[in-house]
Image 1 (tube, rainbow, N blue to C red):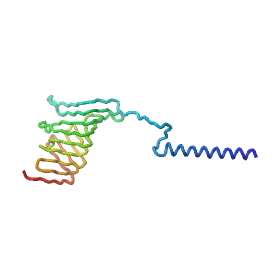
Image 2 (cartoon, rainbow, N blue to C red):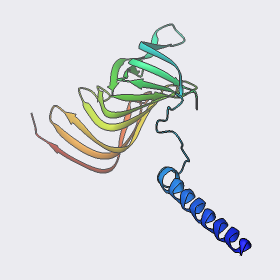
Image 3 (cartoon, helix red, strand yellow):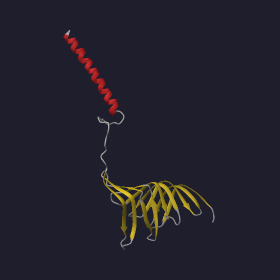
Length: 189
């Protein structure tokens, strides 16, 4: 009879342990995918440096400024070496003649410094004479002076408006190509 009570007690303890394990799993692991015993979790920051009011310059071979950018703040990310920018503003030249600008709420400069990606309310001015282009993302190849976006954009000129999906521009050749679903409305002036 003593053996029977021992196995009964062992079975009850096993059931309680299994129930406790199920409760811990359901409350701690099932939603997040990570087992967490503490209520608060502090993330390790991905940035190793934070700068405010930053300016970047690139000079041409003859000593003139080829392009420049500035931002309200910049953080270099440990994970991939890129630099995130807050409120970036870019000033470049078209065929080394006239300046054009691009601004956004966010940006990212590649680790090698050759690619600048602007996102979130991008506004481009004077890429085309006396024009404004608005979109949600813009890729700028700083070394090749090429600009592109795969997203929808609006091109505003004095005489009208054009909508398109996608754009590629070669600033050295002073060529802008609207890619898909191009629709416009123009008024003679």
